[in-house]
Length: 255
Length: 382
Image (tube, rainbow over all chains, first blue to last red; front, side):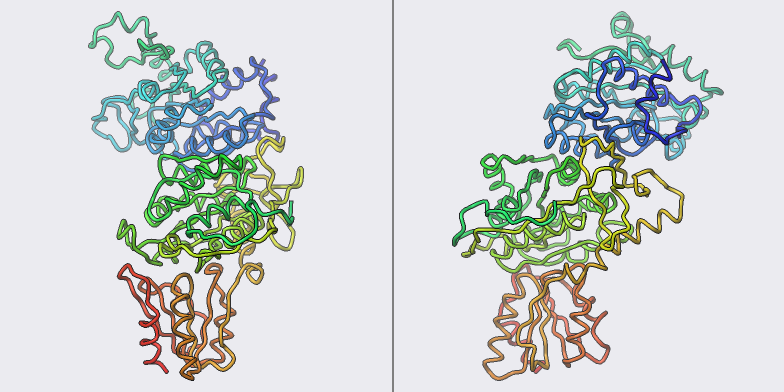
């Protein structure tokens, strides 16, 4: 199976730049598995990414057209390309800092316009590439290079934001839920209209080690323990929900 | 690919257009495929006309959430194979700077119209200025070469819009059309010919899209969806687009080529007009709307027997260094009137011989420089 995926990798790209234990490297494999299961033709695909670790998932790894853009500007770039060549399958893969913080207004307007784009947001809960500063998705109280006494802000619920802005398909799964995440990415790729998958991708090197997770496995285990389904979540009190990551599809009116 | 003669998009003849109308029609004549913009005075009318006209010609019009999104969507559209344009004014032009830098680095053909208004900042939205000339060249970080044109009439807003598309496609560079509020909102008659010449980007299957050994330094440009598996990044890259972010040789080679492809071709890019230079002792060097008043003043003074001439710069960047050197060798004084506190005058000083007096005239009251003002100023020099 793993060797089968090599056909999707750009010849000449031998090693990845991801740190050991990086959730985004796992995510890269899951995206390719989704593409493989759907038998999509990479000649017909354009991957747009911004700035940050997650942006390097498609560029240079994927053997397709790739556009590595400015920080936060993935969705406008993808919009222009899609409108000129509607036959292209356009997929945006980028991080939370890129898509939501600096690019938040473009994300909102992309969802509102409902352009036919698939957006995969790797949420690593900090600015990994610049060394680990807090961002809008950093958990309350977490330690980063710019929140040395603990993050004073609540984490942003990206799915609620994108859903409210008008996206057709919205889901959140963690890379520790690989089969659900592959299924969700497949669904997003098959959705006609703006689809958004938040992939929780733990960052052991920049985030984990500053929050007392000594090994990547410790952080992955913690992520597994935090992730609950939305069906489980409704049974919990607000206190019990503290620190939990609610996963599932958030596409129905009730969500 | 390359040069091609095509029929004009609208029937040849005489039209009564505003400058903004002329830009919209010039873009359609150049076979623009994608336009994105955000409303801002005094360029809004271009957006409005295009929103109607693009439906008729089958091009894509987008009103985006801001100027950053406008320029970035144009870049995406350009790589998908379309000729693209965005329009703006001062504050929006500032927002576009990162996109301009990106387009320079990934060599994206792109036309940007900046209908300049009185600044700094939001300044006077409906009033005129030419304060963005240095920003056009140096607004984006890192140092770069760019092409910027300066039209002086409605006719030229049409002609230079077409020229801007041709230059952008030919040199794979953003081309800035530095209009001014006064020309954008001006209405006058203009002529449209039956045929125009258009240049479309060169393509060559399998050729590296970011490197070339050819003399003009411009690599061929494939589009997304053509099976080229393009790797496009504004991080320093080799000729196939692979990121090389710590390699000094790749960095130097790329930056040098991006510089040289404009500078080495500047004789082909630069346009200017000379008036009455044969016997002139004083020469007015001017551009844009100010050149209209300057020509009036120069002709008035010549009628009085004064030895005065004028050079109108139609291209601001790359700067017409050799033109200024040549004039400087023949005259005593160069007068540079501008609707800013002195921008092009610095370039003139840089290239004129040091024994030539270069005298600026600056007006920043949000109004055009009137012909009589220039007559009075020039009389002091004669």
